[in-house]
Amino acid sequence: MNWKVDGDQRWVVLGPNGAGKTTLLQIAAAMNHPSEGTVQVLEGTLGEVDLFELRPRVGFASSAMARRFPANETVLNVVLTAAYSVTGRWNESYEDIDLRRAQRVLNEWKLDHLAERLFGSLSDGEQKRVQIARSVMTDPELLLLDEPAASLDLGAREELLQLLGGYASAPEAPAIVMVTHHVEEIPRGFTHALLLGRDGIVATGPLGEVLNAQNLETAFGLPIELTEADGRYSARAA
Image 1 (cartoon, rainbow, N blue to C red):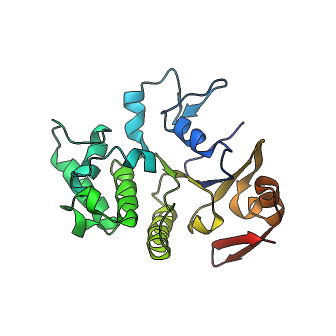
Image 2: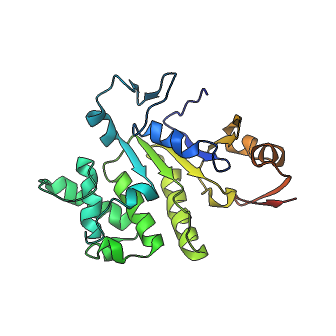
């Protein structure tokens, strides 16, 4: 696989279960290593770069990581832990700039009223937004999101996608890679797609060129009817 993400691009990685989407994201987050080949993340080669210097430059959110957050930790503290790339408060000493950044992202992701709530008491949609707020707290150069809208009800999904679309559309947004199974979960503002099938890459490039019925049929193994309206997609069996 040869794949490159530039700083001004917002990628969606789409494909069926078992295609390697999450593994790809874990490698990009320096949480896993390829068995062969070379991977460069933010100009550093995995296996050579100092991971303690690299990881704060990469924002990462996934359900697996969320399970490591203490349920009895406040939302504010969960977000603050991004400053040290840890998942729970211990004896870290946070500076005023860390607190201001955490409060800023809580406000941007409509979570400021939940700052003192315990993470474990939140709804799924609120927890997903906390994960993303934490992942952007350090102003990363690369943002990696593993199925951020998975398991959400319609209202929570649309609220999250609206916020994520606004973030992705901002000129100052970092490079973004988001994994999903569903075209309905692609927010506005995303520019490119990597479509994977069981045997590897089906198509890669600008979103509008990659997302078509023929490519989706190849990736998912059945005829697909794809529609697009106002920058959002939907699909069903043809």
